Every structure is written in structure tokens, then in C-alpha cells.
Length: 499
Image (tube, rainbow, N blue to C red; front, side, top):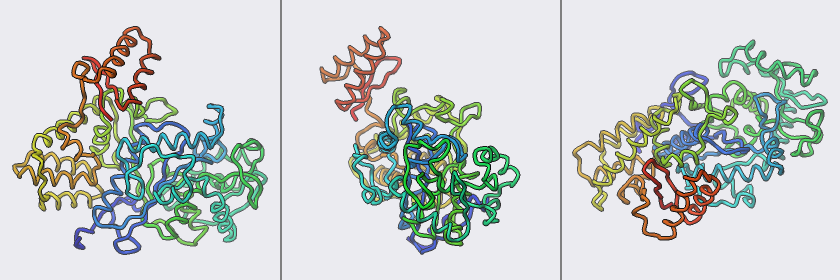
């Protein structure tokens, strides 16, 4: 690829503007992404972030960079708020489900990976996520090979990282915890343009929890099994006593341990700008005496029509299963995410999602009609426009508009299909399978089902639904899922899709 095509503009949060991407090593990029805290099912708000940065990763590779990426699973230490003294989310769910925290983490890592697979999100190393990964038996090395990093696999490294910060004079210890002393890092408030007074007000409640904490914004590196955490389920020995790591230390430890002390890109949600990422900046400086991350990229969230962020706690977010039950294909949801740039807040509604579904299905069906079994060479003109849009801060709305223009164009079918499939190397909409199969999704209505077993189960399910026997209806749906069929309920009856 020529050098002029490598002029990629990205929005760097600390600069508050788009800048030219210049990696530490030519043609090579290292990238760390804050991944999910694995204590519950993911919803369409969570999933947007992973799809966004999957597209960014695909784009960087498509533009010719050798990308090494790491995404973490947080399975210890993430409290129920940004405070250090909340409830550990994983442990809280373990109590709720009457099991142990590791079992909770294993359960929801499996769920998260399956959700990613359905939305065609790749492993961080760029390979497809395999079905039915045996999460409990996965080793640290096996996760690393795929680009994932599980926090509880890195406790010794976290302890060593804290010791390094301590040796450089950035910590102090109380009966309850080891803290990072922000007075030793004057640039703490400046990096993301925060106001000192606002920051102190936001964390003032922390002082009540530990009266020996020196500054309201000091944060925990290691929490001891003391006071309210005396019986914390997950704990390890350390030089400071039995306890567990703070949430922030895991990302510094795993990013630097796996990618080095000079990392090109760090991604995450905009909610991490106020606390988590400034704490990472401080920890990195405390350990190495310089900034570790060159560029910070943050995605925006999905909101309701009233402006509330979709979240589990507010019970206002659809799960992937609920989207499936509405008869909306996985790739239509992915298309929906692509209609907005990752930095743009999305106002979610079922109507807007169904509108995207209609555009997606119409686009794929038009391409399927053009497909004649032959695939030519991509259009150089369209590919250059595609690269230009990618290089402009990964502008997916422009790419979808370009795709629409391509579909309506008069270029030959062979060239058109080849060009679309090039686009899809980044969009990740699984268009080759959809186009060659002849439809965006093969929904088979009840009356056209040939398998008598499937038809009988659906007949029984319809009776159960009329009798409002939802338990039986769900059981029959699950039975069909085990047979490899997904059920879609529509106003005019039941449809199935072969998975």
C-alpha cells in the first residue's frame, strides 16, 4: 500500500481533535481495549462498543498495518460504581446466584463470546471466534494467543506492577489499602481536561470509608481484606497483606505486560474518561516515568429517546436474545451500529432498528439478485473512496452511503460484488454468505417447512402460546434451538431460520 493511503486521521481524546496516526513503529500498531466486566448478560448498549472497535481493528488491518491487539475480561475488582469502596460486581452476582465468583466469570465470559460470535466480532488477533469455547479449561497462554486477557490470570504481575509504582515513590499504605498518591503526579487532572474541584466532589464519599486516605482522588491499587472486605471471596497474598487488586491496576498491568511500555492506541467507552483512564495514565507514569499510551479513542453510548443511557441497572436495555425474538437478524443489528460514527451518541428505538433492518435486507437482496456465480476484480475508484472514508476516523456512515451508491451503480455485477466483498472485510456483515445464498436471511414460514418434526414442535408451541403457557413455549423454542433452528415470531405466524 502506498504511503499516501497511510494518512489515517483519528480523534484523540486528550487533544480534543482529530490527529494523524503515527505509530511508534512504522506499519505496526499496538492497541489495548477495555473489555467487558463479566458478571451478567451483555445488552445492545454494551455490544455497540465491541462492534465499533472490531471495525476499527479490521480497518487498521485492511489499511495495511500489522495490528497487535489485546482485550481484557474483568473478573475481579470492578466495583458497583467508579468508587473504590463499592461492591465487587462479580462477587455480588455470585452471591445472587448462590455460587462462586470464578463460576460466574466463566459463565458470562462464555455468554459474551457467544454474543460476539453472533455479531461477527473477531477475536482481538483477527481470527473468527469459535463456537462453544471451553472457557473453564482455557489457559492463560491460550487466551493470550487469541488476544484476550483475563484479569485473574495476572494477579502476580499486578503485584509486581504495584511494587514498581511503590519503589518510584507514588504510593502510601493504610490499614485498608495501598493507594496511588496523586500529589506525586501533577498532570493527573490535566490529561483529560478535568476540573480539580469536580473530581474531588465526585469522590468525596471515599474519605468516609477510609479516614486515612490523604486526597479524595487518590485511588486503590491493592485492597486488603479489612473492614467491609474482611470476607471478600476472591483474595491473594501480597506484600501488603491478603487482599485483591483495584480495578484500574489490571489494565495497566495487562496492557504493558502484553504490549510493552509504548502503546499506540487505547480504546474504551466515554464513561471511562473521568476516572478509570486517568488512573491508568497515573499508574503508567508511576511505573515508567513517561506516558505509555499515545492515542486514546473513546466510543459513545446508546441512549433511550429520553436521553437515558442503556444499562442493566436501569433495566432499559434489550439483550441480544430479545432482539432475536423480535425477528431482527444479527447482521441487521450490526448494520444499525454502523449507521453512526463510533463517537456519535445513538438514540435507540425499535422503529429505528427495524428501519435499519429494512435497509440492510433490501441491500443484500438486491446484491443477491445481481450475483451470477462470478466475482470479478474490485472497482479501484470505489476502493479508494472506501479507504478515504476509513482513514477519516473510521467513518462508517459514509461507507454505508458509498455502499448504497455502489449498489445502484451501473458497473458490472461481477465488479460490484467483488467491491462489496472488499468493503465487508471491514464492515463484517458476512455479506458473501448472504449474497451467495440469495437472501439476507432465510426465514421459512410454517406452511413451507418440510421437516415434519420441526413442524409438529411449532404446532405445539403455537398452542402453548395461545394458552399463555410461556414456560412450555420457551421449552419448545429451546428444543428447536438444539436442533439448529431459531424461531422468529411475527404477526402472521411462526418462522424458522436454520442456524
